[in-house]
Image (cartoon, rainbow over all chains, first blue to last red; front, side, top):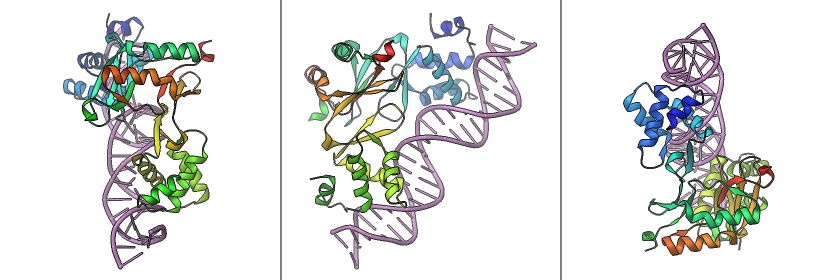
Amino acid sequence: MGCDQTLKGLGYRLTPQRIMVVEALHGADEHVSAEEIYTQVKARYPYANISTVYRTLELLKELGLVTETDLGDGRVRYHPAEKGHHHHLVCHKCGKIIDLPESALFHLEETLSRDYRFQPDLKHLAIFGVCADCQK
Amino acid sequence: MGCDQTLKGLGYRLTPQRIMVVEALHGADEHVSAEEIYTQVKARYPYANISTVYRTLELLKELGLVTETDLGDGRVRYHPAEKGHHHHLVCHKCGKIIDLPESALFHLEETLSRDYRFQPDLKHLAIFGVCADCQK
DNA sequence: ATTGCTGCAAACTGTTTGCACTTGA
DNA sequence: TCAAGTGCAAACAGTTTGCAGCAAT
């Protein structure tokens, strides 16, 4: 059951545009921006519009089918929820992005929950800093 | 030695505008946005311009005198480095912002440093989630 | 007297919206 | 059929920039 069937099942219309957005999202191996999705969709269907891409992403987000990340470059990046979560170490010297397994933040999650009764939404968190290579 | 003296010491001109930006920054008890600083400065000197505010903040940032935070509301917030660091739990139900002492992330910092040789820049990190009240 | 800084206006980027037309169910 | 979805253009918010004039050193 992909996003397509979920959309259909919930009574949303399965338009070609939505299908193409979902496919672009799943096809990308990294976190993609709305612009990147738009470029891919437009290559297949030149009349496609970026506002449709945004509206589709908004819908998928509301349904919990995609998650958002801010990797610090001034645009939101999207990732299919199905593909699982992880976090990011973003080097602000060289721009490298290191993937961090979800488990690396389990301890933090527990601390916040226990000491602050705060339920953190730790999906695709970005932590900025300096990577090993750039520390010379 | 405040920001003013540091600026002067480094050969930067100490203009009234810069002084007012620095004062607005230090006067605020919370993390302020450029717009908020601009409003305060403008109240004292109506000819003040928001681009000067941005340029001053940019300079202070480069010199390490202020730090930036993104509390998820689409604008950057600034905080004087002198006042020390802490982190934020941002509730995305009610918008409440809970301050988290720097020490709460020491363990994470150590993990990233040890296991990934990554030197995280954990100043004013924002963690989103649901606060105790909003969990019903 | 320089040259760094400012004010202004205009551009820019990512994103959102109003509206008339189209199309999937 | 007909509400849901689209394309278009225009608006939006926050931020940046080019340039001519001003002012701190």
